[in-house]
Image (cartoon, rainbow, N blue to C red; front, side, top):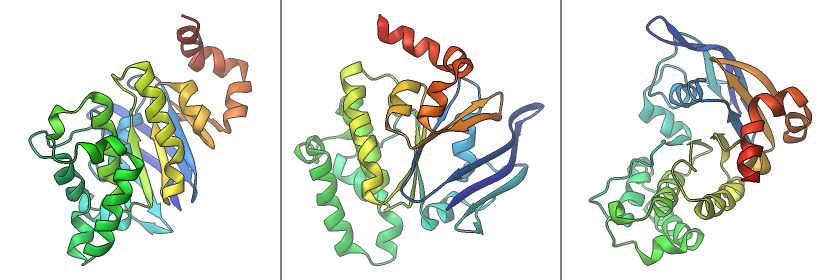
Length: 244
């Protein structure tokens, strides 16, 4: 489905991605783990077209998409939920969700869009209750739900999520991860960038660990958690937090 081969990206002399390989299969939820500055967000931005890789290839169903405009990549079926939500604060929840379906409306899918809007309100009842409320007045967790719902309104085949738990209270994080766990049921394969490693692995089919722009390890959650070196290097701090 989604395949990344030998991907490179640099910020001036600093190499952010170095020969990165990755695969995402239909129906999968795959996590990308790593510390700050590892290149995780850069990777998502190259997939969504916000950054143009210097070399390598990103393809969807065998068709090359690397280097294409972000709008073309959205139309191909790849949608990103950015770090920090980035909703249009003065606009209502409903208006934000409608914007997510912009490309579909151009294709004349108005009836299906209306059905999907109702589906989002069933998936996220709080959004239905506050659909006429300005998005900027929602709580952090509610804004994250709105950002996910807006992305789903594009009917994506691949959903890219960048740090969805960032800045949220633990109770809200648990609620968000319950939502994330169910996302493959919507028909979207999910690529999740997340620093909450244990929570991410708990809902993932597979995981990758990115360090200094390179994919160092990959495997199932059981394989990653069963490797003593990985637990100490990448998951130890998460375990410590759980004990506090």
